[in-house]
Length: 223
Ligand code: PMT
Image (spheres, rainbow, N blue to C red):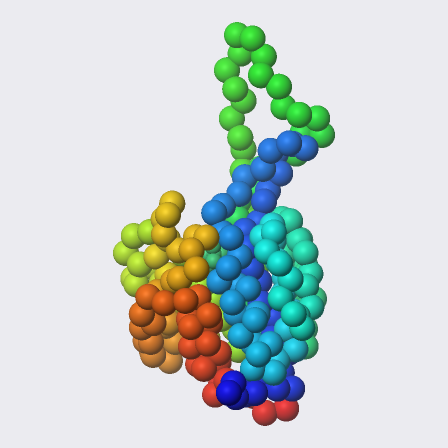
C-alpha cells in the first residue's frame, strides 16, 4: 500500500518541453516527452498530494486527480509555475525549458527567396524559472527541486547547477538523442544542497519519481 505522506500538501510539477515560435509554422524546441514530469505528478497524487501539473507540449493523457495547466513557451511556463508556487509546499522543475527564444516573431511564414542567403536567427535569453524560485522562495519552508539534463561531465555540471540555481535537490540525468528523452526508464543521481548524493539505478521513471518524493518529504515544513 502507498503511504499517504504527501496528504495535505500542494506540489507543483512542470513537465514537457517549451516551444519558442519563430513564425506561425516553426518553433525551436527540445526532445522532452513529459514522461518524467508526469511520473512525478502521478506518484505525488498517489501519495495524497494536491498536484498542479504545468505541462508544455506533451500530448500525454491527463493523469487522474491532478490539476493541469497547459503552456507553450518558457515565458508562459514561468507565469504558470510562479502562480501555482505561491502556496506550494514543493516545486519540481522536470520540464525542459528553452534557455533562449527567437528575438523576433514573424507574423507571416518566413519564405525562402531566390538567390538570397537565409537570415540568421537572433536569440535572446529566456527567464531562468528555477533560479528565480530558488532565490526568491515564494513560500517559507518550501522545497525546490530541479533537474539537470547533461550530455558531458554529468556530475560536475550537476553540482555547479545546484549551487547556481539555489535549489534544495537537483536530479542529474544524462540525456542524448535516444537517451532518457521519451523513454519509460531513467537513471539519475540526486544531489542535495547539504552535500547528499543518492544514486538511483536504471528503472521506471515512476521509481525515480518516488525516490525524489522520499527525499522531499522529510524536508517539508510543518504548517
Ligand atoms: O520528458 P522526458 O522525455 O521524460 O525526459 C525527461 C527530462 C530529461 C526532460 C527530465 O528528466 C529533465 O532532465 N528535465 C530538465 C531538463 C532541463 O531543462 O535541464 P537543464 O539542465 O537545461 O535545466 C536545469 C533546470 O533548470 C531544470 O530543472 C529546468 O527545468 C530549469 N530551467 C532551465 C532553463 C530555464 N530557462 N528555466 C528553468 O527553470
